[in-house]
Length: 109
Length: 118
Image 1 (cartoon, one colour):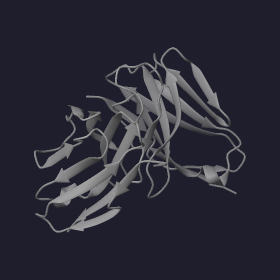
Image 2 (cartoon, one colour):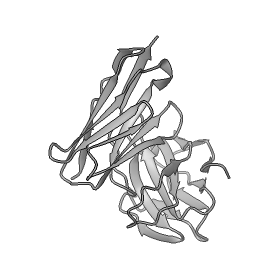
Image 3 (cartoon, helix red, strand yellow):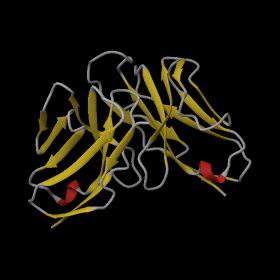
């Protein structure tokens, strides 16, 4: 069955540093991969979608890579801010999404 | 509306009770999804509609779960004879895209309906 792995341990970083979150998937080959942000008590919010023929995609301080050989996506937040503290979910796929458990990011001032 | 609206926001049900959760998608959105999210987990797919047609219900955990979207807009997720393991957040999402298109249309989630079965 499809399996998505994200680091279940929280990532603690200092404000201004770059946060890097990892998403590994097995047992399928998605044509798309999406990243979402989820704050406590709220629904997920779409951040970025990357296609299998794109190696990298950027949006403001966010950068996503998609390595279909390694079956891995990396999600980077540069110049991190305390407001970036949230859980980040990886979801390979386009419409019927299969989500990872998410990684909680904590950015300290 | 401006976003996906779900009601009730919070629901406490006694075990064995039936519940109905409502989703108002963004106006004009063709695709509608229901997800279930347990505490500390990512959302898990339940079912998918394209307009009024339920194209995929492979994620519904049992025949106690039923979803409908009779006029292709508002959707209701019904859980019969609730059990404690049904306690979770039920998320509704909508998208303008039709399944199979290659465009990267955004999926918008509602805030969820928090169900606690006691």
